[in-house]
Length: 302
Ligand code: CP
Image (tube, rainbow, N blue to C red; front, side, top):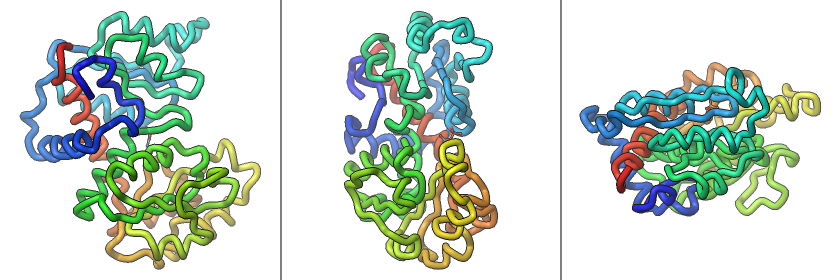
C-alpha cells in the first residue's frame, strides 16, 4: 500500500510487502485488545460489492466498517440491483465508485477483471474472493490465526487438503507462503490437484497429516463434483474425521476457511477438537479486515 489511492488496492498477495503484512498483524493484535483504535472512517462510505454469495467475508467487512465508523454501501447478490435489468458488473462498479466511497470491496467471478477495475476507479479496490484467482484476506486471516496459536508462521508446514485446483484460498496461500516462509503441501484426489503442482504433494492423507503442523481442508465444491464422486469415499480417504485426524500431532492446528460441508470434508465432531480453530479464524477475519481498512483509511489523502 503506497501513497497513491489505487496502489493501496489489495488484489493479490504477491505485491504486498512482508513488512506491511507484519504491520497488519501487529495492528490486528492492537485492535483485538484496544477498541479505541477505531475512528478512522467517520463521515466516509465504503462500498461492499458482493456479486457472489458470502457469509463470513461480507459480514466481517461489515463488522469492520461498523467498528471504524464507515458507512457500508452493501450490494449483496445481484437481486434487487440494476444488474437484473442488464447492467454489466463493470458498469455497476464504476457507478458505485462515482459516489466516491473511500474504498470498494469486491467479491466476483472471473467475468470481472479486478486489475482492470483498479485502473479505472480512483479509490482502493480490495479483493474479497475473486474466481480462482485469489482470496488474499482469507489467507491473511489464516496466517494470523497460525501466528496466534503457534507463535509464528515461519517454518510451519501447512497441508492443504481437497479441492485445490479450483481454490482461490489455496492460490493465495501459495503466494503468502513465499512472503512468510511457511511450507505448503497438497493432498487430494488427482482431479482436485493443480495440473502441474509447484509444491510437495502427499498421496495419502495419513502421510500428509504426519508431516503437517497445520492441516487445512477446503470445501468440496459439490456443485462441480457431487455427480462425479462418491462423497462417502472422499470422506473416508480425505475427510477430516476423528479417525483420520489421529495421524495429526496434538500440537497442530486444524483449519477450514468455510463454509463447511459437514460429513464430507470435515465431520461436525471435529469442530469440538481442541486443535480446531475454525471459529477463531472467523473472529480473526474481522481483525484483519479492520486492520486493512484502517490502513486504507489512514494512508494518503482520502
Ligand atoms: N471463507 C469465505 O470466504 O467464506 P464466505 O464465502 O462465507 O465469505
